[in-house]
Amino acid sequence: MKSTLATVEILAKHFTRAVNRRIDELVIHCMQSKEKPGTARQVAIMWQGDEPKSSAHYALDKDEIISCVPEEFVAWAAPGANQEGIHVEFAGKAEQTYQEWFDPYSRDMLRKAIPLFVDICRRYNLPAKFVDADGLVHGERGITTHAEVSKAFKKSSHWDPGPDFPLAWFIGRIRAELLPH
Image (cartoon, rainbow, N blue to C red; front, side):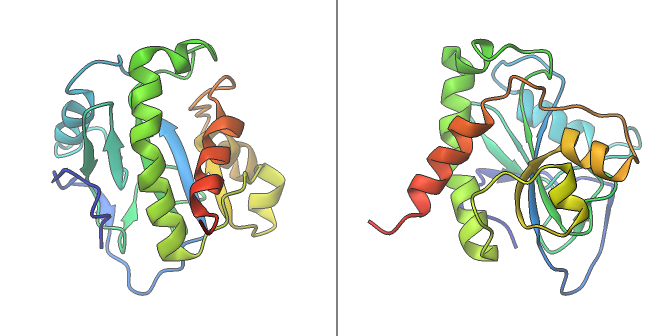
């Protein structure tokens, strides 16, 4: 299954086939790449190769949302939350400041991502709430980051999307879209 919001499919090489998996988390990542046109496509094409042995369900930049792993399969994105997670990679770097996440490119990308997150939350009945490392360990459902997965399960040292990613703003917009109108 994939969101109808994906503009194209570029299937990653590395993922695990699964049957009837339960989705508990929507995990935010960043690609550690420049914010520029074509970044999502470049990363998706990279995942078709032998290295790196990683993948995500979606790669997105301000222009495209690319489906890379069908949602019913397990992406190799954040050890500890792969089985239960849908993983979305944003163009950008974990080192970005809060202001840089709101430059014109990032702002457009974040706005493009909101309908994707709303769609996934609706289809899997995920609450639009942030889940920290402690919540992940205790089985809470919602939206988290690769950094929180790393803290919770200690299977990687990734800290993306970085401490200045506008989580409260982003999740607030998702929550507002999920409210009945």
